[in-house]
Length: 279
Image (tube, rainbow, N blue to C red; front, side, top):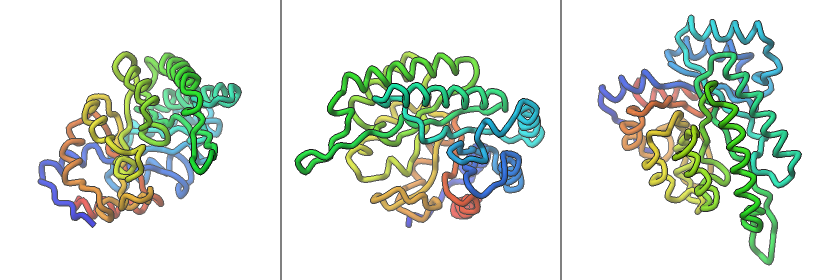
């Protein structure tokens, strides 16, 4: 465990940017907003992998009501896109339907006044070969880059003027062929980043050197996922209960145009994060 000791100045800045992720133990979006309001969070991120948050459950009038409710409460809403989507899938039908799902999420976020949508690229198909595990993107790198480039172009064009799309460091994010595509869109298009500190701390090869990458693109970060682990697996522990040095990261992150989201479940663990931060 790494004890968190931050200056009053940093703590006060954190208070203006801190939020939690709502997942399986709230009844609806209004209840998620209420928990944020009751515990002095400035933001809440709803995870659309959870059925209670599916866009089709909220019709036009209810979407308008959510937007008003957020404004009245002074809470910022962020969205985490469904994790089933894969925008580089080699199955054309899967890829096109993933784009369709994400377009629906973009419209939903725009209607309810959300600030940012965090999304994943998808998951590789793994193939065993002579004692090794190969990803399909390694076997067909040109097709992988073509699919990813085309999908990102479509989604970023669709989201322009509506809501920010923020790519999270998960799955194939750290692979060399992926980073080449990501760098192009970060430098030439309206793509942003979600920095998950827990993922950056994992010791697997794909997660190495992520700090250097994110430090280069600090100006593109719109959301930070805060949770802790011991480096071996993605534990999603309350911050301060693993080995991540938040005393180093938080003074950097509080000065960004980004929200700091406790990605711990259930939601009550976010209150332990506050306690460990001494807020």
